[in-house]
Image 1 (cartoon, rainbow, N blue to C red):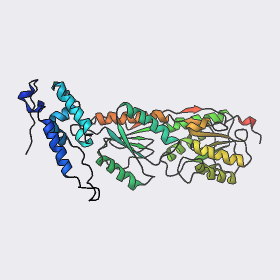
Image 2: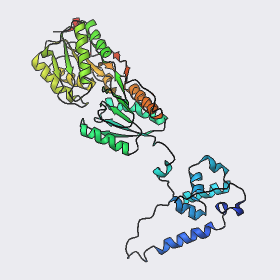
Image 3: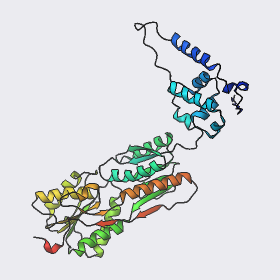
Image 4: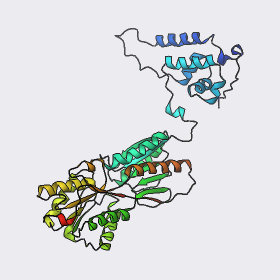
Length: 389
């Protein structure tokens, strides 16, 4: 059975009970008296039940108004302007008096969405994640959207479970960082550095071939031909794409990567330690190289520590180039030459595409949106002619 609420907007308060004030004090006293009767007779008796949260119905009863009228005022609905100013003031004063807080779900019953998205990431980190999320957060803040983050630690089962959980929690779309959308969902999905093409998914990706060309050309123009390479971990979905691009471009420049001059990271993460042990393995295999291309900035910093401990100077003995341009890259000694991914811009772009997809579910979108990198030259690279070998 449906309950209908009919409001008559009039300044004649005596003719409409919603606007009458003569009985609300009696109603309020009755509520207080009833509340007092439920209290235990003394402190030595059983503990009092938790205070009941004031509901919209309680507030309407106290005021002698309909729930619809009270809801209009508290939600600042356009129709509330037709109510008498005294009525609006009474409602707001009563809400403050009883510390009324509307339920989130009640507030959003009339809305088609939750104004929230879910964000799936492999893990939190100081470098890559924080820069990307700054771009995401700033855009969502402008659009009054909220986001929920879950870390899946490269576990496919968690990726699937979290995507379903976020859907059930009302997320209107999913944003994935360094994560392929290898699951089914009715929600629009945008990835940053994802590479799996499927319906309903847009990937914001770096142009890895352009990045490889910038790195190799820079070292080549400095005279380096004996270049060592760090390959990323198998768990990172960028690894294969970046490595293939780097090897192809190196061969185009006549640089022949050899097995002893290549080393792969054995673990993921975004700390210098990830690059430390692989750099030691590289030096155990050979020292016959004048430059090193690291997988990212943090592994480059770890590798520079190993070179320092081995008595090799950066850049006079070995030039080192990183990838990402994290905040600490310019403050390291020596400051790190790197390929800058516009991480903040990629985050903002991904967030804007996702919200656009939410607002326009039938519009067609490109599966991949490539973003250009930038070479940032600092102190960690120098011409090979200056090398003291």
